Length: 193
Image (tube, rainbow, N blue to C red):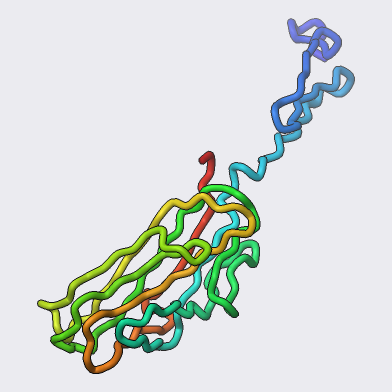
């Protein structure tokens, strides 16, 4: 107890306690000399979920001048089961701002008449962002399209990825799909936005 040695008795201590934001607390027991701490809960607003990433694991053909939904058929990550491998769309279930991204590899048929390759991010069926390449100087080389956007989504909005080609008289191209092909589609909720 420190008596006679210049120490402090437990009865000499007094601690004021208060509640922290989010329900956390710090308490002191004057009898036992023990501090107890309860951390504050982390609100959902600072969580990057829902989040998902899906992969195209088998080649997908697309026809000339035909807007085609990309069938990202394998889920690599889906924290809240909000990506559907039936209709190939993400429906967040939680309102907020989301970073949405896609990468599509393929289109390597090498046809000299292939004029434009386009990738689109669509929200509720409407284009919100697109990217394109004009491969006229790269016949026979694999083309990669990246597309991303920050979208405000409500609980029932849905997001999909489409692609199209223009000017391919042979009738179509192939999007490469393997586990490691890099043909991916993903999104995550942005903290603090």
